[in-house]
Length: 241
Image (cartoon, rainbow, N blue to C red; front, side, top):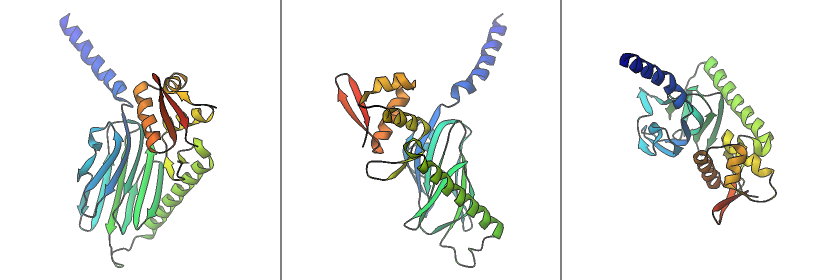
């Protein structure tokens, strides 16, 4: 009898654990890659491997080729991350999620990717200050990178055209910022309101867990998308115009 109970309990744990862990992780992180391979991590995440600070756990080097890798077995309910490569770096290989954006600023390549309900699987290989002889890349690889770049531009334009309900929107300073699906849901709800609404009402109307709503409200505040004011026992929220 006792043996049967133990077997049933073990079976329950193995069956229930994946369901409990699915979607448990989220990330909105930035990875600033230095020329020596060290990486400065910042942002918001409950994933232990994305703790803020300086680390070298994400990079490796083979001769003159550097590699930056983000690969997890765990599923993320939502994630947005940006990777900024060292100055004068050139990409030789890129494996990224379906939604990716590539841009260059001040001599540095920035890659932004987002997704949901999936593990993170990202790899970029790059050279720094490659000479003309060393910078030769096969035509097929060049075409592949060009296609990926065009796809990223098309993706960004698509979301810009959709306005404030898109993954890319503008804050009060006119800066383009990425929003997760949940953050877009909150912004869309606030757009339909004629006056400030309480955080409790947003939680009730959208059915978002309190902890998740609080985290996303704070993120939207930092991005300059919304305003928040304490009124008695409630927090009143409205869009930054």
